[in-house]
Length: 184
Picture 1 (cartoon, rainbow, N blue to C red):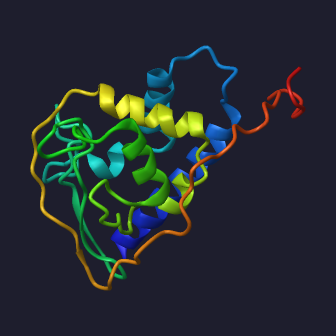
Picture 2: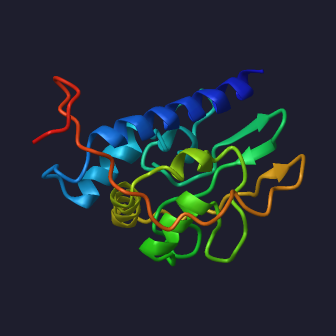
């Protein structure tokens, strides 16, 4: 039951990320990498799953986003989270920015395999083009960590897709956080 709660908590956190991502748009002076760092390290909380942990549950030093965190989720199976660093052999180092964005939004790796649950693809499908590109830019800027991980053992077949391909999502309207109206 504890693991199912983690999955639901992760989904809620990513849902919150989409809401927060909506409020920070293109009017910002931050770079794409800075925006991606913000999204990945705070509201999307990617490290909660993609960073391996020691026996006490603490993230392993110098292994941020290197994958290998494992957990059992009753409906899904035994989940082993993948390496998201730009390592060319064990991570996403051979992926282009467009392939990273497509994996986020459409749940398919460049080799055509589907990214299964517990990855919250339905939430990432809502990311604006800028925010999806920012996440990709940030991931590509990270230190490469060579860390081979196992594979998830799903209890049921993974769906063949998460829906029709998402190729464009507009930036949300800019909102004045003080009054809730569009910024002038």
